[in-house]
Image 1 (cartoon, rainbow, N blue to C red):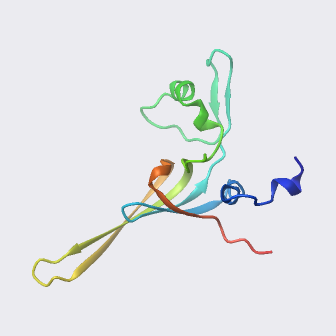
Image 2: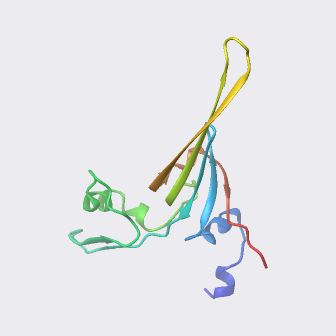
Length: 136
């Protein structure tokens, strides 16, 4: 496949493929928003799954990288799939909640933010994915 063919957009998922290793915006159900880097992880596993090295992932406390690789090895071969399951890094999550004051019946909008170094996004909660702005 040539470089020119690799950079063309033939279907909607190609926009996401072209955004690998770039920051994207993801809107989720329940008024959640994510901004993070779409990771393309690389793993090296020998035939016996003895030697596992992950170049793109930070160590996650309480999780054995070896067992994770053997049970979920498909996750570590691509940054997203056709269901919009995604692996994001350096994520900022914004959660918006709306409450109604019992006395005044006014809407009280609250937002909370948190930073997450590494996040697996399940695709069934994804509403919208926006690639970075591209200029020609």
